[in-house]
Length: 107
Image (tube, rainbow, N blue to C red; front, side, top):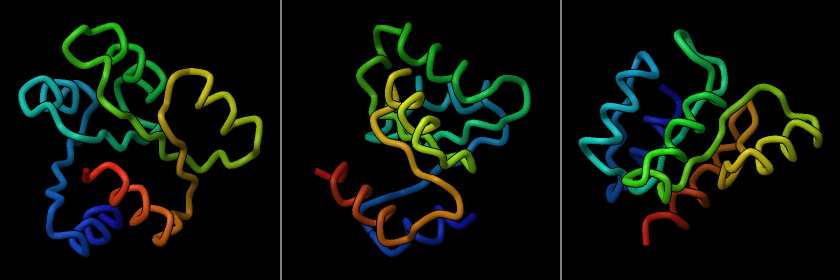
């Protein structure tokens, strides 16, 4: 919800959420978004697994994917970047950083 409210501050962005990873993957296949914001703690499968599916799909592998996690230690962030996330946001979400991230990918 917070991400949707923050994204509303940037009229160029339209946020679509998915309650389950399988629905999010299907949405990514249909919509080809400019950016995927991916929580690491999800039902069905974790964010690491979702990232793996995205990176293995030739049609989706170039999508920028940003992790969102409560795990905020430097080692957690490094693990995320090493796994292939384009960026890593920690909770609680820094609104200024999220807006800067949205601005960067709006191009």
